[in-house]
Amino acid sequence: MKSYIFLTSNLHVVGGQQLYITSKAKWLKNNGYRVNIIASAKGEIYINDLKQYKDNIIEELTVIPYWFNRRKRNSIIEKVTKIIGRVDDDIIIESSNQPISVWGEIIAKRLNAKHLFFSLQEKNTFRTKDLYEYLAFKLKRGELAGIKEETFRTVFKYNWKSVPKLRAYMSNIPEDYEYELLNELKPVRYTIGMIGRLGKPFVLPVIKEINEFVSHHKDDSFNLIMIGGSSNKKNYKRIKSYCEKTDNLNLYVTGFIYPIPLQLIQIPDVFISSAGSSIISAHYNKITISIDSQDYNPIGVLGVTTQNTIYRDSDEPIMKLDDLLADVLINSKYKQEEINLKVSIFNPDYSDHIEFLNKSADTIDYYDFDFNKPKYKVGQFIINCLGSTGIKNLKRIRSKL
Image (cartoon, rainbow, N blue to C red; front, top):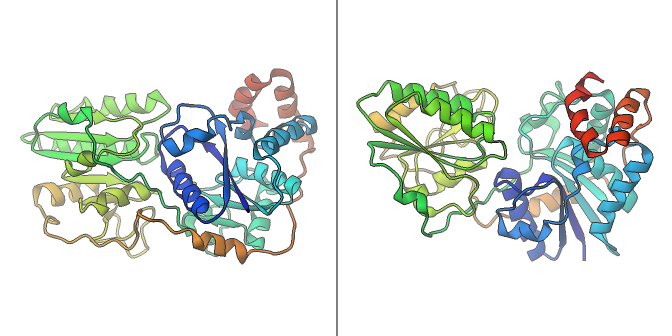
């Protein structure tokens, strides 16, 4: 039986990354793979299917391996291989962000495994020439992919379109059950919904635009229901402070919740979301404004004027959220429009991911990182002396090293 190992940042939020890994792990198990998931951050796990991996947390994976000396790197690799256990068949390792993908490469070398770096980040950069050369190496071998072509645009400035894209199904499929918040909602004229993590970069700009729109319609009352949470309390406080500026807007935040209560999807008159979260509401025939992850402006009404959920096409004009909300809510412009989606979050099929790996380089080779450069010695010394405290301090100062 083949083994498939996910290396990811955390399991304790309900975001696109966790939902994708949950759905793919289920598909892999149904197709004869043994699956294991290893993460780098602790926290309360909300998704039931991920709770079985609660002990598979190695916090050092948060930091790129450059900052550990050889002895410590080997110790961390041993922790990972101990979790994986003995495997007598092929191993595939999939990593989801740059720092953890470097770990994925050196762990794959230790285990003689295939390593796919499938970036779930909407934007990628690189800090060193070594990292650029590593990404170029993975691209050449067919072991690099992103959720969109634009994922590696800032890395490969002249040939970014050559980076393959794979679909990451993010299936927080709503279920019908009683939910306390439903009894707390105040009666209003209009309800706006948002789905996704509160810390997403587009959230605060969108909240500002919503407040601007609401302030233009003082004679109407509004509820804003945010289905999602954040590990950082500051994100909620910022959102709350903006919403308190307008007397005719009531804010409701669910926090992390899984699955989404179906009734919460049915209440809003319009949703504003990005990426996979926007597909959820649109699937239930709710008017959904999808937001561009680069400029945080609306792409359009999903399934009506656009099929894009992360980036707009070059022929799609930049729109103002204030104008689009007026069209949807005040003018009822899209009320009779049929919503047609080209993608679905239900019954995801990851056979194209396996096909992608089958077409990658059939020779065994790994990027040869140089972890002994003098500029990394300062960071290695800090971590060696201070342990986990050193890791936290290094995150603050490593950009200056």
